[in-house]
Amino acid sequence: MPSIRLRDGLSLRCAVDDYLWPWQRPAPVVMLHGFARNASFWNRWVPAIAETRRVYRPDLIGCGRSDLPPEGYRYTPEAIADSILAVLDALSLARVHWVGESSGGLIGLLLAATHPERIQSLVLCNTPTRISEEIREIYALDCESTPAAIRAYGTGEWCRRTLGYRLDVERAGPEIAEWCIAEMGNTRGDIAAALHECFETVDTIPILPKVAAPTLLLSGDKSRIASAAQQVLAATLPHGRLELFPGIGHGVNLIEPERCARTALAFWREVEA
Image 1 (cartoon, helix red, strand yellow):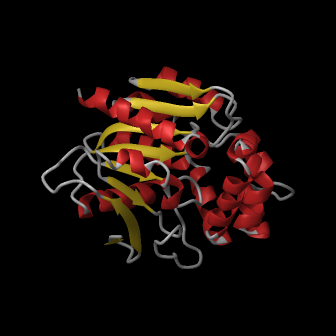
Image 2: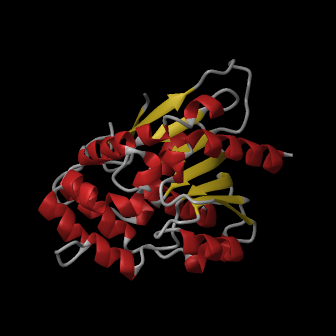
């Protein structure tokens, strides 16, 4: 797992799934996890995609195997985007197919708008245009804000209390639900709170017309967080295409991972043709 040193001295880890011959050079795939998650959330996508593509799965600073930031560390969307660009440069990835889940999709949109030469296409899973006031109130629990709730309860317990909004627990099953809680619980509370404060500042609506990359939107049609936003994204993105999974709430990337991966592969073949 390569470790990329960033300008602030922290190191970001990136899982690489490479099972191709050295002379095979298809367009690479970068997959960025959602809020307070890590690269392992893509595990079930990898077998299908890695048959024909090299896959790169970075962990954001403070998540997964990347370095822990110092106390009081402040995340910004621009700094996160710069850290991903540093990964692309360090691994000599000039142009990539981007796959982002939730906030990982937000970062993909920001990169596609500001560095279009680096993003060949976007696959966005469960991605909102922004974090709505309704969701902020729900996620705040009995605290003044979502970050305050995460700091008060810890990431794992906060995740347990709010999981039904981020994962269709009936379709996913108890094993995936408990795994998600445990994995997100590995992200320190102050780090998760700071990440949420960062993503609360993001509103992608103004930049959507600038995103020229072909974009595939994947979401369950019952997702309270993302379903309505998919219609906005599909209507506003110049080359947006929406694929809704009927009867599924949030978390289609975990509930139907193999189907999502196959759909992405077919999309990339169209883009490259």
